[in-house]
Image 1: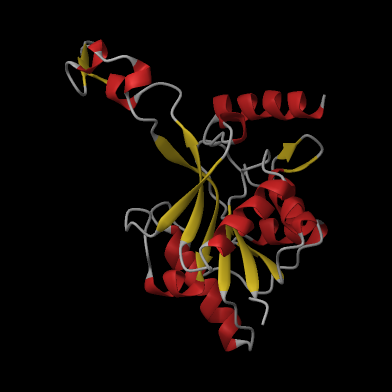
Image 2: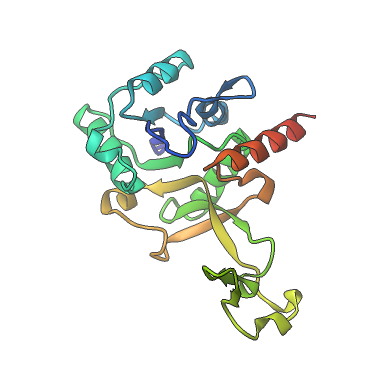
Length: 232
């Protein structure tokens, strides 16, 4: 039997650094419209759900052709709410309405460079592990993390790992970080509240240019330039 799969796009209102960033115009459509359309084009999902507590975002989603079946409770929409409880709320609410899913895919609203092909690749990797391990999008650090500094209040720099600057980059292991673009979960992991440090994740490597995390105006400008270059 084919697994039943839902895509969840969290899109709460109230962004402090970039007001209305989830619905702000980005190359001709509201920002979240890009990942929503990539999800639809991928043909991977039985349901695509925008999780929001904001009435205006709900209206924009509807105008884009993505009906919001129910709203997110306000207590799951503050600055400190983790994403797992948001996903669990979606799964539980659909179950109460008679719709049960085996797989949950978290898609971030501000990931306009992700394409349907990236999601299909994530799905293939997920199925390679029989849908029993979550698959998160990752990308490599541009320089070795062993060469990192911390900066004191007086401006002086302190090596995080003293002595590592003498080691050549090619002699250091490649390190990766979560892009925040998408993650495929078995529903049991969502219901159990698993986190990104529990050793139950497989990484799908994306190129760094697709992995911009849009939190402020500088990130937005960079994403616009990369998007424009992709279209050329």
